[in-house]
Image 1 (cartoon, rainbow, N blue to C red):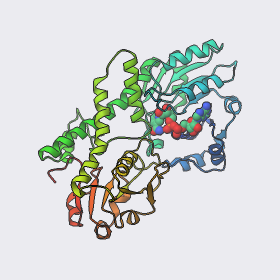
Image 2: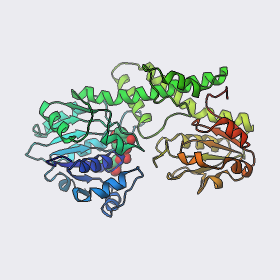
Image 3: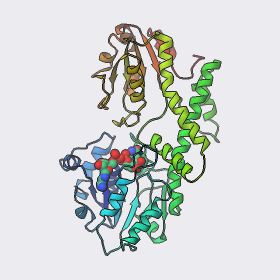
Image 4: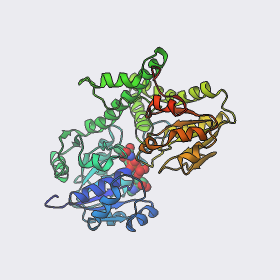
Length: 429
Ligand SMILES: NC(=O)c1ccc[n+]([C@@H]2O[C@H](COP(=O)([O-])OP(=O)(O)OC[C@H]3O[C@@H](n4cnc5c(N)ncnc54)[C@H](O)[C@@H]3O)[C@@H](O)[C@H]2O)c1
């Protein structure tokens, strides 16, 4: 624990803000989290957690005496030395990042006369820090520091990722501000990459783009495997041992979703375009991902014929396991396509809800989802699905068809359990 706890205000009580606040409290700092949604703050004050993120409840509970929650800006800023911005930056219709919540935070900052450091955790386009700097200066707040401290945590493992990051990136205008934010992370053992503000902003966007590129790359390899009789799981294993390549993000599947990758890829594409550059690789990465989600429909049609009136069960709604986040989830795209094909769609997920998915019936259990179904699609790699009695489920289905969109199950075992089983890029099996 840090010897001299600092006072930190965190704006935004979402996935990033709550994890940031809880982890800084764990490091010994006093944290006040501010959000504009009163219900969220009420929930947090009661000791409940409005989102599902493994380990977060325990962390918040353990550090209760160092954590406060408020809707009031002044209460959050009172005595704070660091102001973390962790508000949403969703896409606008044009694909650019919508920074309105960021600007609200900057404009709401009270005119403090002491030195505080504003730290940007939200993912923002390159150039945002520069604009914030101008805006603060124009308000007579030149003494307020600014550091870009992008977040690389992944939902589902966010607490561990924050406490044991691969690196901490700090882009500062003033070296002393970077030093102060580095010190705030004392207790975390990780390399610290110090840079200018624009480079820190770009590091976040480029890291996401690199991960997305790996996913679209292996998905295209999978599609070629299907056409040529190879097994992408073996191929990924074989190339993953290459130290120049590595194993991570080489799981072929039905494409990425989530609250970050889709919007951040669009934002980087638009950022490049607005700067006069056509980012060809990124455009391809995005397009491959869109097509990948739709390939499942072709597989189902191949196995079932017309989908009209067919009962299709989606196993998983969250965009990945261990989160209840369904933003840009491939399940939602699939559900929409299936409904448009005239199918009846049921969905099961251990924590996520089908809210906003009109026409989709949510099942309480995998058994309920698969009863009398014509086919199931494994959409989210929930570990629970490894322990299911697939043979008894196959017997309950109208036709035992399963498309494994995450290559999670053993093809031989699934066929032995009575399924007509298809996966992604596994022609050889
Ligand atoms: N979710 C992730 O895994 C992840 C990972 C890395 C980076 N990021 C980035 O972090 C940022 C936050 O993402 P998130 O997933 O936590 O978003 P989120 O939507 O879960 O949470 C954002 C919160 O900010 C609140 N908010 C809006 N305006 C506010 C204001 N003026 N003051 C205080 N609170 C306000 C909202 O009510 C909401 O609770 C985004 O820019 C995102 O791209 C997210």
